[in-house]
Amino acid sequence: QKEVEQNSGPLSVPEGAIASLNCTYSDRGSQSFFWYRQYSGKSPELIMFIYSNGDKEDGRFTAQLNKASQYVSLLIRDSQPSDSATYLCAVNSGYALNFGKGTSLLVTP
Amino acid sequence: GAVVSQHPSWVICKSGTSVKIECRSLDFQATTMFWYRQFPKQSLMLMATSNEGSKATYEQGVEKDKFLINHASLTLSTLTVTSAHPEDSSFYICSAPPREIYGYTFGSGTRLTVV
View 1: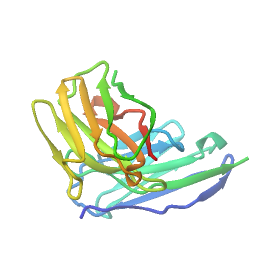
View 2: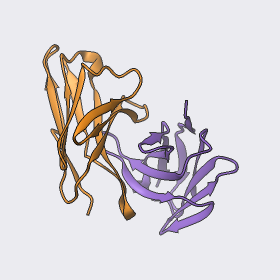
View 3: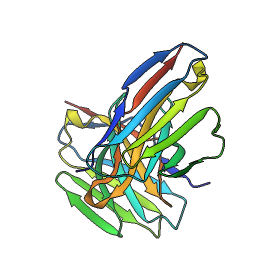
């Protein structure tokens, strides 16, 4: 069973702070890793994806991947109330994506 | 681009009836489409993979006769929930395979409520 684990939260951070979201996965053969944001009742929106070990930055978002530790994280800098949502970690271990349950983020004004 | 159009957005049906959900790739051809189901506060769970020109591949535990998947063309995949029951009430989402910078493109989802 290929597992993708996330802390369900809620994670509460004040506006302007850095939010740190974590994800671990069980399949060492996983090739690519995705972070999606999902608002209640809506479809997931792609934030970014990462293939290689290290950091990848896109605006206020930074994804970090450590394949040896089977760990991927997402940092959100200068968090805004509009960032409040559920963040889904997804791993490609074959062709389709395997999702974690998501971490609920609440950014308080 | 990489747009997947999913319809309907929401549907309420009576127990025992069938419901069809459509996903169309608008600006690209998709030989494969992934179908997910999401219960409240749960993860997206892959139900099946539709393949143009061949049978769908179902995940373990998903009833093939209940969830009929058809990939009629390179731009259309459908999921039909047959003889729906209240426990089938869920959020159903389709996704096209990864393409270049777009990653996996998701449809907007269908909220199914069976009463």
